[in-house]
Image (cartoon, rainbow, N blue to C red):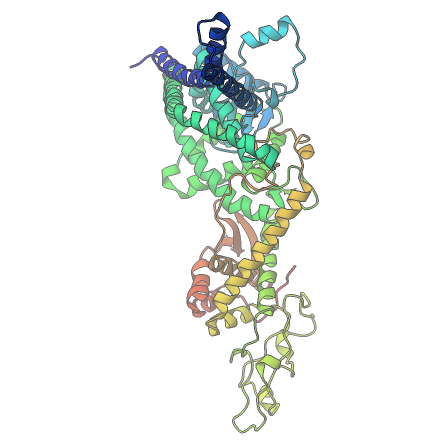
Length: 621
């Protein structure tokens, strides 16, 4: 087994190779100046001729030397001043988590490595060390004289970034075992050659980012040259830098073998489980709330509920919930609720692109209010959007089940469907009056002329009730072959328009001043990109997926209003329909049968089983 020193030596060798690339680039930049110095010195000493050719060579070499030095100074200035990328995180002060700092320092003492300079949390299932010694990453330093020179000679240890889901799901011993190989990486990071190579690579990467964001001809032209040079140097040192980081990781892993090795295996299993629960919580539970302008304020606490539910359903995860009796790692924080809130807001900003701070259109929601304030409102918003789209569709013949047909003996011609007044269901009264049922309303303007006894005989179905009804949606999709594609396309356009308007509002509302007030260390591009998410959770939904979601929402609204169902929250699947206190998870297949095949019989059978009355109007927002 290789010792940690072996990995450090291998990393140092690769770091020196990276630094040689830097030295080579510097030598190439100084070469024209060296040639010019030789030519001018030879003329002054008389060793080189004084002819016209030599004079021309000296002036050409001098001009190239000046140009080369100016370009080299430009590249060096941009690389030195460019701000390296910073991972978005929530900084944790020692005052707010003294036990966590004590655990990390004890771990560093056992590993015989420098302790991290600070701790931060990120809404992700990962942990790493991050160098934040660049002056743009911290407050201005006022040290002078000897203190400043001492600060330059003593490199600052990197910051330990911990995934916030780990603190809530893992136990204290598991967290210590998980952080052991990460904290062990501070040892190689303190080596001067490795630190210098990392600074060089980060500076080049930041220079490329600066060149990519350049605007205007006066800035774009020189920065474009700097970007090309930086990319050339990055390509030259890519392999050496990659192998250096692998050697550093190998050395840290070897050093951490002596600390809780058996418990590290258990902790690694918890990492995979936590990642699965965190992903489902974000995509199925948090994303619907974010799209409505609400952000769950206790995401990390929700991970525990999601993973507990996963362990109940999945036999592979059986037994993990029994660990909950041990002390959770979040007890190492003085105020876990406040930190969870900050991490939840950061997660919303990262994965959805929400504002940097709460506001009237961006308010927190607790898990207790989630079913009523998110699930029910989501269903009714989508049902209202679906009916708006149906209102704006081209007029077609009404389904035979909706209106009674004229008797064959009637001589009166049927009215032209295109001349009938449009029905606006989405903007009608939200509820049917209490003293009349929907079946009692028979609008005469929408039915062909004929004997009125046909309506009173009871042999024909009743006319549709006023207001938005599920029966209207089902009949339109089932009996009009073109309606499904047309509604899906218009729903996609409607949702895209609403998302553009929301992004424009966020861009107008956002600003760097807001970012500085919430105690979050944002990454590059969080403000400049106008609130767009750095890591979108899902690709844009297709029109068919949107149509299926909206039909499902309409069915759920009808079930809540006519069958006594209730909105609920499933920790792994998000919004859920509760019938008699139990979740109904069998609605997806009947809805897809209607949306994809135009077959309404499975859905009608499901509605009959649950007791939903599709002819009743539903309440919209």
